[in-house]
Length: 165
Image 1 (tube, rainbow, N blue to C red):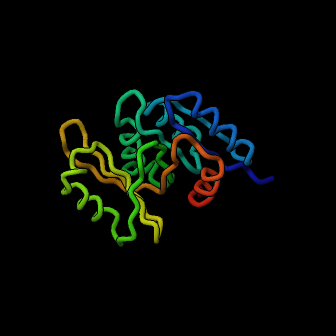
Image 2 (cartoon, rainbow, N blue to C red; image 1 turned 135 degrees about the vertical axis):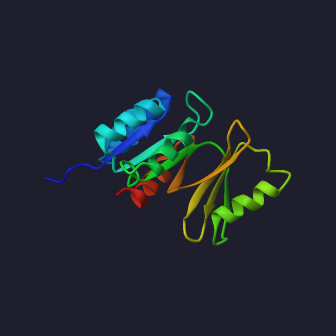
């Protein structure tokens, strides 16, 4: 018997978790949830999910990003793909480098003060996030993709299929 693929949702909103869990369980996934970065790390260890969905703002404004950084930089978790869930507008480009586009946006007076910029290349699907921490330093990191809030089942499932390992 084939084992179900495991998905971890890290979000501090129980309603969001419930909606996503319902959609994914119906689609045949085994779904786990955590409500903070710390719980998320524990679940990553114990569940070893095939994919994680991370909310951005939880206890702190950047908690989801901090968790994403831990996943990217930890030998233990670096093979776990993750999607970022956000209601923030996603800026799309067809430029080869989404990171280069992020740098250009940061130089633009209309965008340079925004805390968070989300980017996706519509040609090859590469995506990333540029966020400013409390100290004003800009951080860039790649992501597999984004899930818009409020969650739309028609968009959620194809995005998951694309990235789950």
